[in-house]
Image 1 (cartoon, helix red, strand yellow):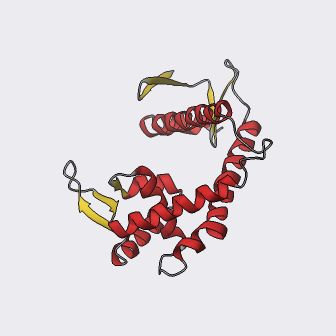
Image 2: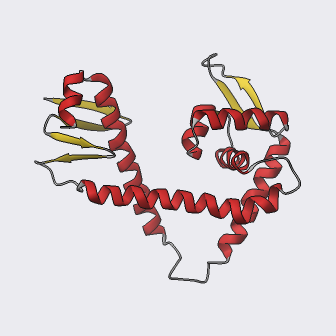
Image 3: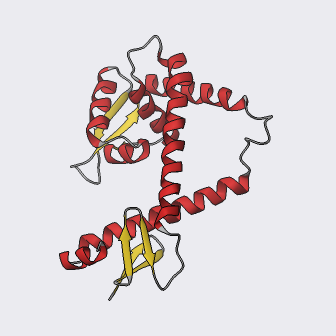
Length: 202
């Protein structure tokens, strides 16, 4: 039994031959990275995310928000909105920052009270609210980006720690493929009957 799923312009197939583990699809017919290797990759990505946010919290955010009432997580929401430079739904902010929906909701509420972001109803879907930076929020976002770039400049002469364009593009390619596989599994399990899902994890 095979289910074909369309994700963007790429088709993904999930068959009964696959065994679904957390964050990995493994097939006895196709050579795919074993679960242990994928767990290692997930662990490294988590370390990168936590390390990057820790770097910002320790060395970037205090220089920008020390005379404001903005908390670290709220500053990270501002940083995300500044990087996207667009009106964004709350669920996309949660996905982009790695925060849960409740944390994003509380952060947005405080940032609205502080005059850092603005909220309006989506014209396409009146059930969805869109969030964007105010002029004051953009000023903070610009300062965050500028301070971050100064820190990265400290490593520019260290060739061992520099990341080449090829390495960066390969990382993005692998990460997107990894996320696409997770989305395919999620869609498969949401449309197949419970017996299929039970067989997946046996």
